[in-house]
Image (cartoon, rainbow over all chains, first blue to last red; front, side, top):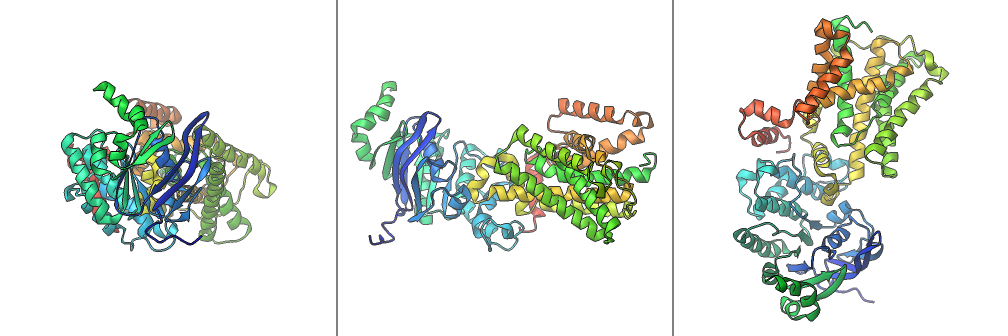
Length: 264
Length: 297
């Protein structure tokens, strides 16, 4: 088989992954190709569908029972989360998990130093390193997400939810990721904040040239920014397509969108 | 040890302070590493044996003891990590290390067995201990501003997500544990060359309590809580003569009182920020101070 050209190699690829928690199959034979081209994709699905578990598999936190993970065509199955981060797959968490006792800048710098310092990445040479470009990269990332300069030296507990989300995104962006996985970035934000976030995500995708994958429950938001959507239900990948495809898909309407229409 | 002498008191308390800071490192990452008495013993016996029986210089012996204790901490924690011990299981594991070591020492004739090791050269002096303790405290202040220090804070805050940012978690934790163990060993070496007579039972549970209680009292949030706890609980009962003989009771009661009234200890980062800026914008101020003295900013 000939090697595919660079454009065709997905940034991140999952091949028939299974994850079991006791008797429950949280991820059931899911295959996913996250393209390398800049843009935004989304994963939707009801609570407990296995979306976050899928992110955990992709970032090495959970090892799938079977299946394969390829980053830019390289087999990274069974690698540790830190190795996957240095292979430039970055993510955020539900509920904006920042390190509470580090300043905003140090939160971002912690991630920046893992990829920027000379020597073996993450090895002893970076533990006391002073000469890396981590600080510059951290500040660039914070500028990139439009976080006011004044807030860089405060602790996370003084930020609003949106600002904490921005810091989280900046922390992930310092890795110059090929794929940026955002777990419910808009949860708990008001309409104006959501709009600001959407504008930022659209801008980030082109400015850093990466593929952003969001897990999101807000259908309006997903339909407006994502060009490709995966739908998950009960650990299975139910469907995949453009927003128009998903809106028209019978199975999806029944499993997810349909249940919403009962409420309203 | 002559408890009546002020010099002896200060020296031993400063030695304990060094060991307590070594104990603080794993403890601040929510890892209850009770092996500290064992690392202390490794340092004490190694440096005592090397100077007494091998005619090594005190400095070399002291460093050898610290390195061996650091290696001991590394091995203990590597084993514990290997079998994924955490919480109570980990605490019991590290305690059993210290206790096994004590029982082994009780039976090694070359190290004096249960009778103890005598004839250790008196090399530890108060100025030396004071300089080393000051250096260790300054080192901690600096450490909190290095990457490894940031990682320690991050691990204490949210260990689960640390590896997601490219940090090899196990290697980082083992390094910090080894530094802690080495500090314990260093303190042990200083101790043995000060008291001049050591026996395995000096390094039992009582030593652990003497190191840990003041730290919980002072607060585990930042290392200066541990320092303050060590100094306050170490000295106050000695100066108030009436209390001296009820030392342990006073320590326990004071710690209980602090835990009830201030669950995170006497001194936290808020306390320092509050002292600095007078109640307002506490965390903010404290961070700014921290950053402005950061070597890499």
